[in-house]
Length: 408
Image 1 (cartoon, rainbow, N blue to C red):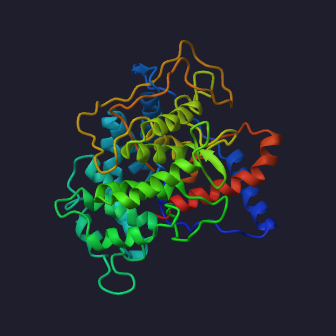
Image 2: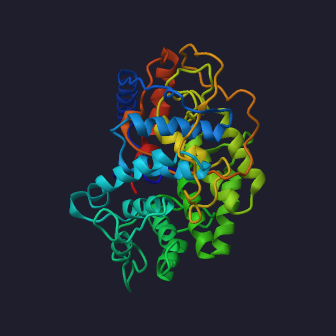
C-alpha cells in the first residue's frame, strides 16, 4: 500500500485507451532504463547480518544517507521500517530532520492542507517519539482536526480525504490523548464495500483486477485501533480471500511486496498469524541476496520480474516481517545502526533477485514498517527485450499503484 507514495497526490487508476496505456508504459520503461544511479552497498566498518528484516533496514538506511532526493513520504516510510525492526535509529533521526525541513511543502502543497500528508507526517513524528503539536512550526494534530467536516453529507470526513487518507488520519489521531473523532470513524466504516474491501476512491465494488488490498489493510488497522470489530472482521475475510497460495496479495492483478507488506502487518494485528507469516515468506522470497547487483543487496523487489521501485517496495515490505500495528509502532529502544546483508565475498553485479541465503521465514519480532516515494527509485538498467514487452502491460499497473500511493 503505499498510501503515501503518495508523496504528492495521485488519482486511482482507471481504464484508458490502449494506445495511451502503451505510451505511458513505454515512457516509464525508458525512464527506468535511462535512470541509473550507483549507491554504496555498505559503509566502512558497518555491521552485517543474515536477518532479512535487518538487512532490508540496512539497505534503506543507505538510501537515506546517500540520496538527498528522497521525498517526505519516502522518509516517513523509512522511519516506519526502522521502528519495525528496532534498528536504524541514526538514519531515522536524519529522516525526521529532513521531514521537518520539507514539512510545509508536503502537508500544505499550494497552501492548502492535505489530510493524508498531515496524517502520515504526524505518524512519523509519533513513531519517532517527537511532539506532533510542535513540529516544524506546526501543530499537526490541530491542523488535522481542523479539517474535520461537521454535520452534513460529508460529516466526519477530513477535508477532501480519500479513503486511504481518512484511515491514516484515524490511525494518527488514535495515538493522541483525545483519540480519533467518532464521526471520522463512522465515515470510514460507511466507506467499506459490502465485500469488506475498501477502495482508494470509495468505489464499490472495485473493478476486477483493480482490487485494493493496500487501502483495505490501512483501513483495517484504523478499524482495529477504533474498536470497530465487525467492520474489521469483514476486511480480514476479504484480505484472506484474495491472498494467493504463495502468500502474496495482488493489486492490479499482480502479487507484490507493497500490498503484501501492509496487508501482512494488518493481518498480524488482527490475529491472523498464519496468513501474515505466509505474506512474510512471499516478501522474503523477493529480497535481493549476495548474488545481486551490489546496489540492491538487501532490498526487496516490488514483484517478480519487475525492476526498480525499490525505495517504494522495501520499506512497506518490511511491515510484513513481524511489525506491530501502526497505532503501536515505536522507535523506542531501536539501535542506532542498521546492519547490511552479510556476504562472504564481493558479489558480481547481476540483475537477478534471489532470496537471502539460508533465511527461514521471518517470525513475529520487534520489527515492522509501512508506506513509498519518488521517481529516483527506478534505478535499473539491465532490462531485457522480454521485460520491455511484458512491461507494456505491467508498468502501467505499477504507475497506477505508485500514483495511488502518493495520494495521501
